[in-house]
Image 1 (cartoon, helix red, strand yellow):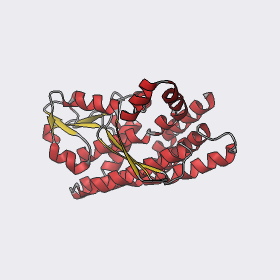
Image 2 (cartoon, rainbow, N blue to C red):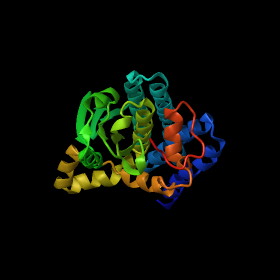
Image 3 (tube, rainbow, N blue to C red):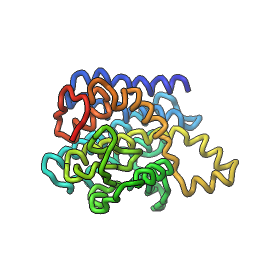
Image 4 (cartoon, rainbow, N blue to C red):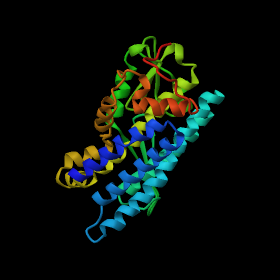
Length: 293
């Protein structure tokens, strides 16, 4: 387990080298590399006793690389929203992102690359099992649900924008640090004066995709969850309704390790840098100390 944790943090902190280059290729290798590594490690965690370690890792690795590439392209597409001021790209990006993260999950779970697909719409998770007979399962992601409820407080639900991008969007008159918006889990809150800003929406959409980047954390817990379901009828019933999005407990600390929003410069935070890069067609404003209106 210690080796797995070490590998996890190595892939995260290696992005600092990529960030220094400030090139699209760096973000390409980050997304592809993250998908490949976490999928390979997950395949080992979920491997069967008779399966060989090296072969299992490589099987997960190549699946994760494919998924990571699709995730990268989905973020790339979001730049067209601001560049062309058109939300028609949002659902294409969302479906591509869901395909990529589904493949990474399949690789990490040591499943066939095409075996299971998912689609997240806010706190709603739809799973499509296509291995034997087609089966659609609906589950609620509790962290996302709580984040959505919290985001709705003193905010206005933007139904049109939510339908356009496939995520729950809220607006309010004042946002922390005078930012254009923020995301809690996968709930988006935008300052009302920025609701017509295509790049702001695209920026926050990248943050939501970053939340989905860490879906693999849930797959790492497949074995203990299986045991709990067998030993506890309560947990078994709970798991039929809820899909616990535990990636929030990993992603938030990583964001804070990057300095949150309190770096000397706003885009020293890798997650903010990536969001701005993809939402603004590769351009990141230099030496920005805070985001104003």
